Image 1 (cartoon, rainbow, N blue to C red):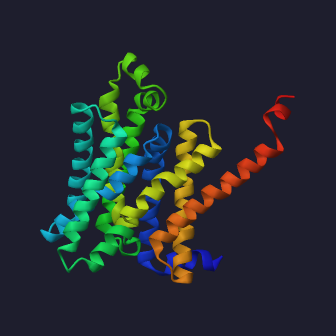
Image 2 (spheres, rainbow, N blue to C red):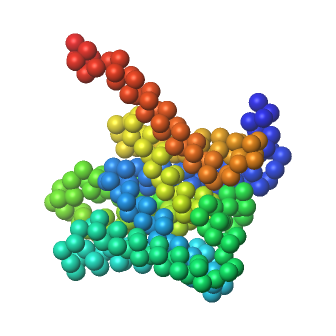
Image 3 (cartoon, rainbow, N blue to C red):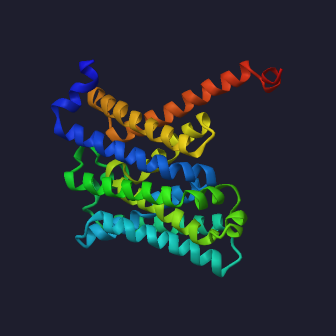
Length: 281
């Protein structure tokens, strides 16, 4: 038992990392559920990578990385909205164009500076073991905002997930709430990148929510399971990184993905043992 709790009790930075990871898990569990239900994985991936030029530019200008990440995310959402409204191109095409363009711009900015070696690793893979109290408070505020918006907009978000036209008929403008949902995804990515990095936050958005989708039929239950799986992954991943000297953020995401495939295997085996015809009889 001591092996499971002593790293967090004896080291303040590990305790802060656990708290930050749990907050990320809750935010990603809520937002990731809508990402999975609406099939927004591509825009989530694009946002996770598209913030790179904003972060790089902010660091070059001596500004906080989160300011650049926010600017990059807003540029992505604004660009996708502009392309889809002013052309006949599909949303996927618009996302792909902005994704490739923003990522390429980020690589160009990084390549022009010789001082990004350490910063780039932190941007891509996070600094979960170096989370400050200020970052922890920021993550807590963002997580609370995500929960409040998800609760207030639960009905239009659910209608969007299953029938956007029905959302319009019910008096909830589908385009407006779609944009709001994208902003929630962007907020989660922007705030969470400081903990697990831009490359790994996408995994925290999808893997726990995917596990929730395998185990639950109600949206609230999916969110609860996703948050629980994310929190468990954070705890187990941090322990693995502590005892085996592994990268902390990557360990957390690997545990989350491993849990998804374990649950997938278990549910597939259960379905094979109890076919639909047998259950009906």
